Image 1 (cartoon, rainbow, N blue to C red):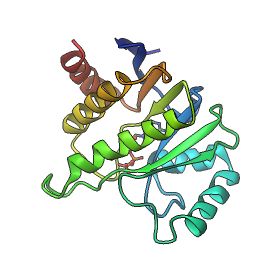
Image 2 (cartoon, rainbow, N blue to C red):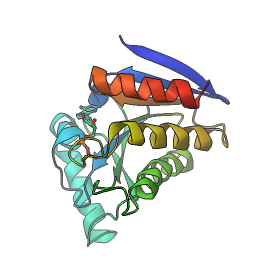
Image 3 (spheres, rainbow, N blue to C red):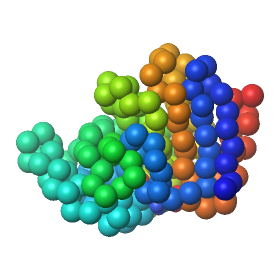
Image 4 (cartoon, rainbow, N blue to C red):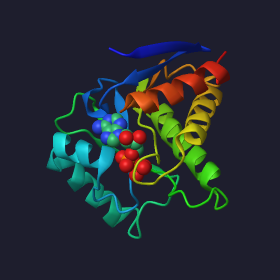
Length: 186
Ligand code: ADP
């Protein structure tokens, strides 16, 4: 297994080359779109492997809480159907245009909203995908710096979340995150 661990305050931060739908952390994060009704990439795999109960919960969230869709940077919680994890946090990262349309702030917000929600539920372990770097085309290096810095700053302020895994889906992505982590967490 390709995997690297760093200690941040009392939290173990892990980079792992894996499929996020196989993770056994208490919660995994879905790089959803604002419709919450499924899509490609991580979202498609989560709904496909987790089964229809996840979509049913997402539809209820749309109906009762976000009839116009989940705004970019927000996060909501559902159970996880047939997956190994118990819960899913669905968040919406920004679509990259040129970097001057609030993309860095929205990407940071997606990580912070997810971490705040996990903390409020008392979850001790969480897995993230590389939000926005697939269909939404956020440049990988820039996204990795935001992801790792945001996680670093957040976990240092709390003692509930003891494990954060950043789950990368290709060796190229893994190497970029590893280089950023070695720089930011040294
Ligand atoms: P977004 O729409 O936010 O860009 P995507 O799901 O298209 O979300 O891609 C986000 C990142 O997740 C990309 O780096 C993609 O390669 C990766 N990815 C796709 N499927 C999986 C998976 N099953 N597990 C982990 N990462 C995945």
